[in-house]
Length: 298
Ligand code: MN
Image (cartoon, helix red, strand yellow):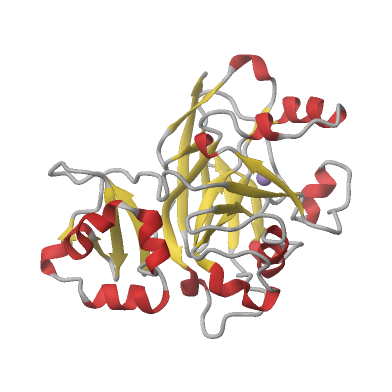
């Protein structure tokens, strides 16, 4: 796969020279250490999001302060962009063709569930698959990164609460989910097994996915693909999301306060398939990048 990099993206890394993990910025093909520009604040991604450094005018101001002294080599590995979000919310059956894989139509209202933040892992992290759980599937997804605290967000203001976009794999213990669903139990354990939530490798600033104006529904049109050991399994477009981004934020925030760094997995397209130890799963979203993780014996 061609290693295309976006014009701008922020990431978290461990400095080669040692010191605490911190944020970096990719800008016009150059990698920068934001610790040089923001000092110890670069070690606090949630604070940087809340301060507005990672999107819009704040990001543009930050870019003005980059220079030869902040330049660095491309990191050897990317850490989880947001290590401890307050929550990870997800949409179920949000692509019609995926809902039909399970013999149902997509729900009229958004179907929400959660993954426990403990299950998050970085790009490149190994994902142990517990032996006794039966079928375990990949689910490649576009992930929203919240930038501003909000409750009861109006649909037409949803865009201003988004800081960025990243890539996620909503790995699912499918047999366990089916068993729990049949009993009317929540899906949380089938969705939250340790390491079942890789995210990354970086976050694209919100405005960078739109060419000119931001559409009212704040929903981009990007190719989304999943490859397992190089073989194409999922292949769709984010414009096929049933419940659009603006509606998702408005609905979620009727019930819970969204906070900077919270993640929202927007749902997976058709083509989910079972995983085995040794398999390499790549989720690619056009214009963002590739999230890659290898499965191991659990
Ligand atoms: Mn999913």
